[in-house]
Image 1: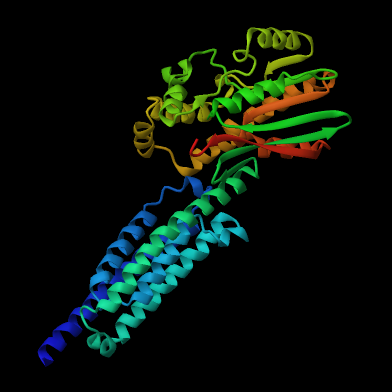
Image 2: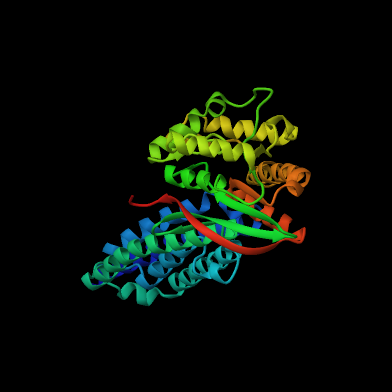
Length: 397
């Protein structure tokens, strides 16, 4: 009996020391990686978080059987990691995503330190613990189920808050679907409609926007459309022909966005009336850049990115994107300064050249462009007078 107790104590001590050292090593790795990461957390490529998940999963599964592992420790660690993987929800409600995630990283590392100290100084308590105890396994098992369900909820809430925060409310994730916001700004009798959208969505969403743009108006309406041109024909074939977006849309059961200036819906009578309105008081102007206008650096990065997802197959594009040779800083610079900043500057130049001739100006662009555009219009003295939301992608329809 004494020999069995001694063997059990050695097993408990050795197992907990090994687990504690590994846990501390990976948790510190995650903390350091997040503290030193300067780009947006959505671009984070660190492998530390997946490795930490793998370790805690294996540790938790071992804890379902072996009572020598303290359930208070691994349950607490798994709970904190669940919240960290949910973009720091709910801490992100009172802080930015990066701060919320780093606070949770610090708490996980603190738990790892406490566990290591407990494993070093708790020899007597460890030797007294049974190898298996059904109450321990039952509590751990129930907690595993609860955490699995909870992770779905916190993951959804975290993604929803992250999307809302990143887009400044122009995109919202709800149980009903993904909705896009239209904000109306006004100055000196000129109304600007910032209309959020995605390039893949419900066909009814695009039809309703087309109807909105071409409805009767007292005065004149201008629609500044989005659409990068390619005069030098450098775009990958799939993006140039539209095959890539069509492929993504088809696999998701959605529709690809087509040019709003093309009238393709409704009866013949409605199409003729719409064409007449377009000729009289509704104008469409492409306010986007040509891809060759991008800087050499941004153009090279963009072609590399588009080339990796040009197949039109979601799974294949997802896999090839992981092998993309592009740093997080390069990705953020390409998106923020190139694809958003430079194109928004071009749009504002077109707006400045034409807006005095129109009472209403609609800007139906990808929602990622709109927070920056809203800041630019507010700096010009425009003020928001209203907003509306539209479901662009419905769930369960």
